[in-house]
Image (tube, rainbow, N blue to C red; front, side, top):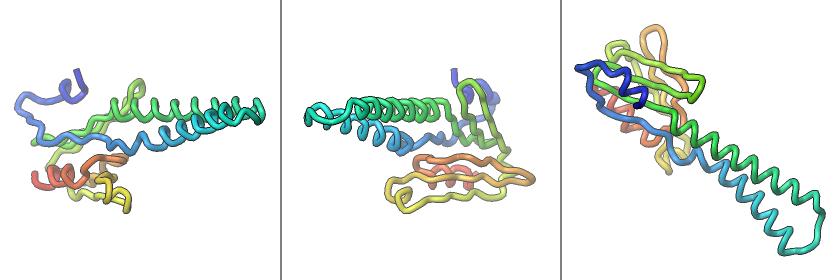
Length: 152
């Protein structure tokens, strides 16, 4: 059972669900592939230092660690817009949550870089009276999520 399922009120309906974009996996994949390329070059070349094997394996392990970290972050992040509030939860062991009632939302800021515009991801900041929800980074289709918040 997800966090969202646990906290929804009986007369509350989900309007939109946000999710993290696949771009969060790119850094780990590139690092792991670079380590793998170094290892392949070492074995096909036949020459070189054995120390380079250790370096290549270290780079591969770091890339795999980064991929696992990104997967856990994407898996444990929940973003939802309901007819009453905006909900954000992240974290596996250490949980961080943020909720804002719709009547307290003042503005929604979407920040997209050039690659973000091309690949349709970005960051969202929900500003409200007194506080806001920060840290919604690498969100897939941020304009759709913003529209779901603003329309209410």
